Every structure is written in C-alpha cells, then in structure tokens.
Image (cartoon, rainbow, N blue to C red; front, side, top):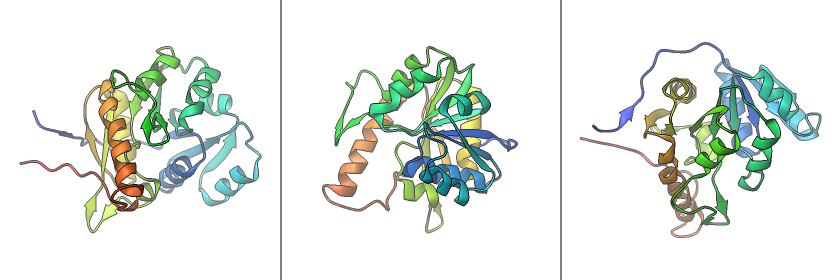
Length: 222
C-alpha cells in the first residue's frame, strides 16, 4: 500500500492550546501563530515571566490556566515532560472529544519508560478516558527543526499516528502550514515505533556518533 503522504484542503484558523511551554511548545506556538492560528499558552502560572516573554514574541496569543485553555481551545498540544503528562491530562478531566496532539516521549534518560507493547500516546488516550481524539505527532523532531523544517529545499517529514481520520486531517494541515511533509503512519499504536525512533535520534544526535540536532528522518520510496 505504501506510505500515506497526506494532502488535504486548507482549514481555517484554529485555536490551539499549548500545554507545556518548553522548547517544543514555545517553538510550535510561534510557528502556528505565524501562519494565522491563535495560540493559548496553558500554564499553572500564566502570569510568569516565562509566559510573558512568550506572549511578547508570539502574535495572536494569550495565556491562561491549563483547565481554562483546554476548555476554550479547539486543538490541544501536549508538550510537557513525560513525568508530568499523566497528572496534567487527568487534571483537565473531560476533553469533550477535542483533538489532542501528543508531542511527548516516554523517556527515562535515554531509555524507554514503557515496554514495547504500548506507547505514551496510548497511555495519554487512556488518561483522557476516551474523551480526546489523540494524534501522535512532532515527537521525532528536534525543536530547531520545528522552527525551520527545510533542509536545502527538502521538507522534513512529520510522522503522525492516530485512530480518528478527521483529527488526523486537522493535524496534517497544521503540520503542512508550518512547512512539513506529513506522513500518516497509521493507527495510534504506531506511536510505539515513532517513540522508539526518538531514542535512536537522541542517541545519534548527542551520544554516538554525535551528529548534533540538525538531521532528520526522511521517507523515500520507489
């Protein structure tokens, strides 16, 4: 059947709650905003200096508590450290069928935090008690690539996995908007593979052979 390189019609502006304002959340928030989407930075302390600095550098953005941001937004992006993912999702409660992009990686140092019979994305879906349409995305890419996915005219691939076709259409367009070639790798359980790819990427980038962060996975076929 081959790989499913996604092509969809453009969607209108989306209100996105960024839950986790580290390198990944901050970079994606700015990238989405630059393409016309509205951003809510969700934080336990939305008046912190860190959040204020993000707001100053992100057009069409505001900040709010995690609960309020999750309630208001159409799409949620989860980019907190893995150790805080469960408590964050459970604190929100019912997500009302909203799209939840899981950009986390279940890591303990450079080692997987979960057995290969499940994935972080499947845990996120479980913690949301089936009230969210979870799509795994942005977890195999370094934040500097999120800021600029172009490699000498070649678009970086964005691998997405999920069980809801309409949710994947929205995530596909969001990824396309900010410059990625989006590749649908199948159902949510395929996140088991993409999360393993992240460990390989980190090892090659920073351990052996220390390639640094400016390289990507790229799917080609014939």
